[in-house]
Length: 188
Image 1 (cartoon, rainbow, N blue to C red):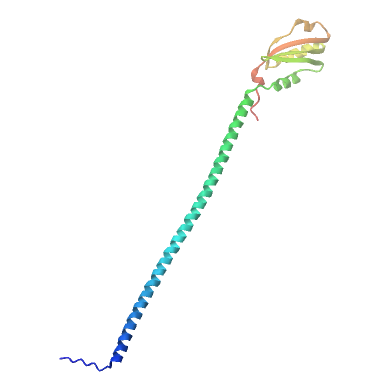
Image 2 (spheres, one colour):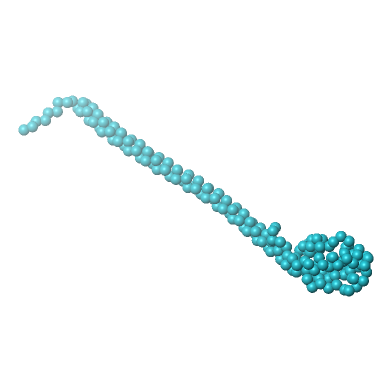
């Protein structure tokens, strides 16, 4: 048999009970405080992670928008270059397809000897009409042989009246010019 005797006075019992409850509530408060601190730590780490993620997404969006703007600008430059290249190609085709009568003038300058002066030069459908004055008939015959010796010139027609005068002979000559000799060279 067990006998329980409570020899403590009532005020000590209340004091012990109060101390017990105070310790119990203090432990509970400490545990609750630790839980709150842990909860705040977890929330702050989640907030920091979300904030960093948001900041990196904004930076990525900004860099992507700047890259998109640069890409648009690059596309504009490429379009401008394509248009300039197309215009240049058309100009080259246009330039190459036209005849250069300068080539004929250079050829005539090389072929006409001293003592010959030209008074008229006209063209029609690749036929050139020359007229001028030669100091002597031999100067005219030299011009005639040089013109006939050129591979760019053909189909010569000259009237017999060119040979009538021996001094200060007026002459007329017409001939065909080969079209390939009038083409511009492709060295631009």
